[in-house]
Length: 453
Image (cartoon, rainbow, N blue to C red):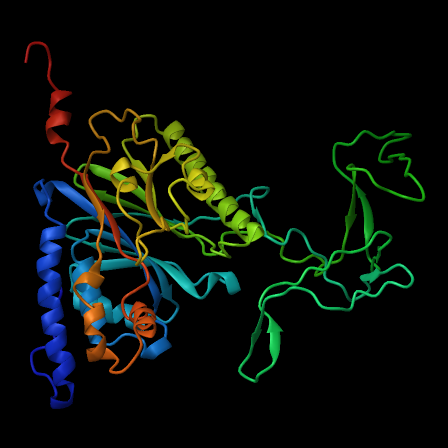
């Protein structure tokens, strides 16, 4: 249960926020009891949630003071395991949240993913030690060689240091092009996205010193004597798949990518149920740009393939394994019918109907960004099975930071600005959850009997 240690003796200057927080918590607690009412004995189930907490630990709009932290802690306390996304590198705000949750809660977190697409984020699992046991297995998922995701821009050469583009005589590519631009703090106009200008026929690429023509491994050659290969190179134009050009380091752009934010897999046990959970925050890019959307889809597909292959191998290594595998988090899936959803439900992963039937988890509840999926949920695992006893999305904006509360937070402000502002206090995502049965004692005992017994 959360501990509201700042609400006992408010400072006179803090009286309004103090009273508003108490009223908000009272509304929230009543709503949560109604929403999370379980038809099962809670000692026999585990409730798993996923929540993208917008820029948690960031400083925009002043960050989060105790009021939103108390609301967030109250919601999370209704889970037994919570996968959190967008937790920033600075953990001070997160540790303040943990203090409110109390000593029953512990957490596991990744390091910050490098690169601009990583956005300075961590993946975090919070778990109630009274309900869930960490099974001492955790790791960040990386893609094997040959399975990395091709960036939306394809493959690029960096021009310079001897690598140059030579245009046909009389060609001038200067001019006006459709492009996304923005101003920086100094008022300079800069490109917000790459600007691509088609090259005319006849354009040539000058290669730098240190390049080499490569004939790929396993191609057929002549061997006049040991240690020597005789090859015929076409001239003056070399254009065949058996050939490559090796370039000096730093010439190729970062075309093939790992995940934008490294997925995090942790093994838990709750009652009889052992489960490997992987939390993700998939690359977003742009809903309207086909190339960026394709990169998002490819990243989801690469994830499901890698996790499915790992689960298959674990089962092969231990055919008697009763361990479930699940993946949850922010997939940035556009809709339940979109190709991004189909990319998730490949390689044996299934989103339960109990989750497919609920509204979206964005504030407007019209997008399927967040998901929870399980690998081969119908697989025969003996006495243990995936039995869902509840699922849902909780809309906290009906109870705290309500639209009718705008004057309390932003007197004289506009509804549009208030709607955006409050997402930096709570989030622009709603928490999604699923509740699973964990007591399979009766099922196990049924396998232990004998005809005489």
